[in-house]
Length: 401
Image (cartoon, rainbow, N blue to C red):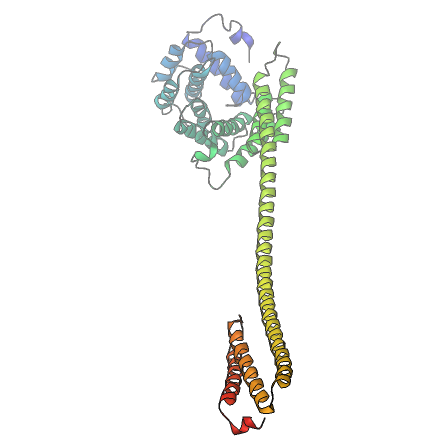
């Protein structure tokens, strides 16, 4: 390309239609020769610089005309005018989105279909402020990459729009017609393609870094953004290379790293809390089991103590009564004048003791089940009663005792 087109850039506003047509004829001559690629970085750079210093109305009049006087392909010139219109609308400062979307609606049907057409249309929708606007833009960007054009700018545009939409709305909230593919994986694939095809463009590395950041791969994200900064600083075309946007991306990545670290620590703490909770539940179950065993042992001990206490009282009572019988028998024998009287008194004493001992046994607590206790006590009372009767009534059998 000749530099004459840009000698007076920013000084003289172009309003001559013939100058615009001549410029586009020159552009597409280079495209035909293979020196430029429609939609390529240099192609866009030339049209962006030319459009920024060209009257809007002049481009609009040419694009709206029924015919264009040119020695080149009319479709090429008309498509070039469409690209110039887009570039003029978004550079140096983008128009409001209503104007941008209106351009697409007014001119998209006047421009011949080309593989790069969705790409340039998508540039307008990058400035949309609603979810529907951004969905249209990213869908157009996908159509452009899906056309399999070997163009790093088109690859970078799709990846960049994925990141922008994710920052603005969350990429998962956008309904895209991309088949079964994962949108973040597609963005990474095309961002890497852009870098492979042109490893000298800083913007491509910055986009790749942002895609890695979107996927949570922060080491790769930081490495690629650092590379973008290095490339921008090495550019000889800028006296003061502007790396502010790249450094802003780098700060965002570092903030994400801190958040990621905090989230990791939080998840670790949650895991530890869950582990402690599980151990607590296990200890609580063990405590309940031990408590049940303790209560069971305590109950058995109480039963055993009660049983032994009862048996001890019965044993003491029985031998006390027996001792009393023996002592009383001796005393009665000494003080009575006849054996029959002594015998009657002793029998009465023994019977009374047996009846009293049986009644005393009935009052003692006993947890035995069945009929063994009532039978034993009943037997004692019966024998005691019979002995008492024998002392009162002259029973021949007992009289012989």
